Image 1 (cartoon, rainbow, N blue to C red):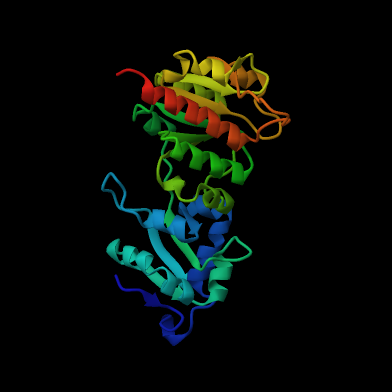
Image 2 (tube, helix red, strand yellow):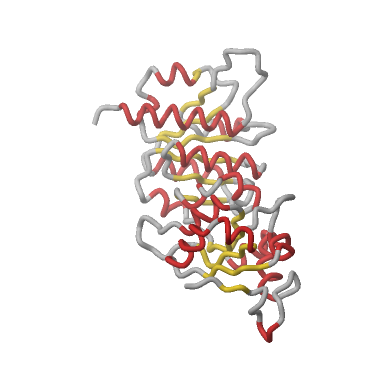
Amino acid sequence: MPFVDLTRAASHGAALTPRSGPVKRSGRLAVRAFRTEQREFLVEGPQGVREALAPPADGRVGPCLEVYASRAATDRHDDLRRAAADAAVAWTVVDDDVIAVLSDTVTPQGLVARCRFVDTSLAALLRRSPRLVAICADVRDPGNAGTVIRCADAAGADGVVLAGSSVDPYNPKTVRASVGSVFHLGLSMTPDVAEAVAAARAAGLSVLAADATADLDLDAADDTQLLELPTAWLFGNEAWGLPDTVRRLADRVVNVPIHGRAESLNLATAAALCLYASARSQRRAPG
């Protein structure tokens, strides 16, 4: 599909502006209620757009519906324009003021994709027999949630579950922090942490809770066969961690040892260490 310059080819010959219907509708996707109603979200920046345009491994239709691009970004990212053409996705050239309406950043990069939601139900995620899953319990910071998704993807995890009052995975800051990983692994949302843990255990996953006050540390756990098991890691809120009621749901509680003088690790860093420790153990396990 060739790109369309809607700065010149909008309806009735009028230029596409921030007040134009398609732009206003896409701009409303910054609001969670509208995203949920439409089951669409925005992805900003070249790497996120690249992953949105990549053909899904299972052969299904890709999530990207259209790309808005400034003239400068169109000139700079001809590879992405060609990828959009290959995927039959409209590449719409617009002025910078239109990009500014759609962007969530102070300095827009000139590329915004409108995409379908990519999440699946928890039951569907667990039917895939995952070996490594991250469950975020009441994780409310969008940057942390997006980084956990990115780390889980990098570690080769099968999915991320945002449980309880966790942030919307389609929050623009969450999507941006995932750097495209939101498209790579199973993503699920559920309002009940206990139900998420119970479902993971019923699917054959060992549930390990990450908590700084645990007696068992990650180094010691790595010396046993504990981390070789199919595992769901349970991560808590940035400010208060895991409440006792949630800790008790886990099979074991594990802390990340701090060997230096740092007071603590932030959520995303601790999640990365735990997920990589499990991934390493699972990969070196016999069979």
